Length: 327
Image (cartoon, rainbow, N blue to C red; front, side, top):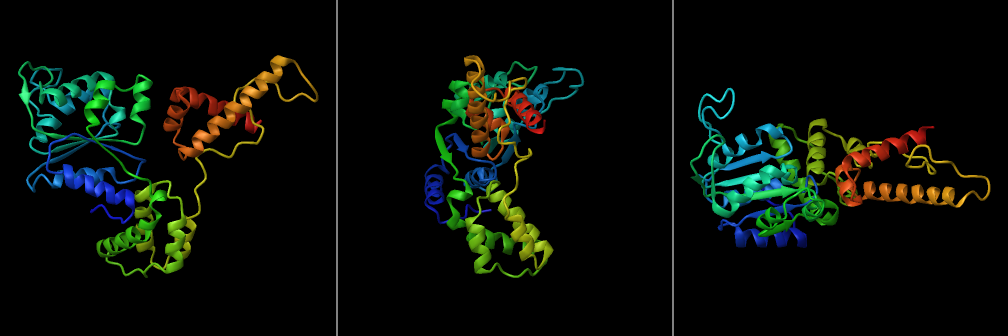
């Protein structure tokens, strides 16, 4: 798929791609989920020639114990069941592009070995002692703030600087609403051919409503909506229903629900200084958490980073908050 859009943000990204596509510079793609980071990575890979390989790795989907063998391969006898030599993803991407999606999920111990590959262009297979050289362009992507992850000790600072040679931030669809009609009609033509349907074109009013929608799932959400439109036929009412904002994955919280269990409720009048300070603290904490969740469209992991607390702590606070709200 081409990088469609006439908005200034997309035009700037296209200009940068033209400048770096025929180089071997490392590229870091940042942006919310569904903004098209893989599309950009594939465009970069395509500029290296038709024979150039493109190897994608979803860093969030690999079990920790398999990381090293997946990326760098292994030698016979490296572990129980390793009966033959196996090439890793870096070898398979030789002279091409390796796309490390959700790079923030890579374990710290593997980040050190990735750093070595970026610095020296060399690595060794698991269980091996011979260094192998590779010529691979690395494109990494994340929907999180890597600088915040560095500050939190969850991502190596030196690796961040190695990845951040060329940095592209893909804008969310709500910030490029002028591109929505173009994208919607592109997907309409694409899936009408794929599914052999003849759906009615989008009317001006429907396109206006689509451009005004916030698209929390970005281009991916728009693409899926158009797929459903094509398959359902005359589905304007269905599309209008889909454009209704989706409620958060948790039920709405009561206005006065405290965050922490066992906190005393408001007293009829006065109260001790400790009680008053505790009450003010949980009200402020509750407001901060709800604000962070709203800004991240209820992405709890990203909200935890914004609040500078652990994901587990946020989960515990939400459970306590919901329990109090249901009481």
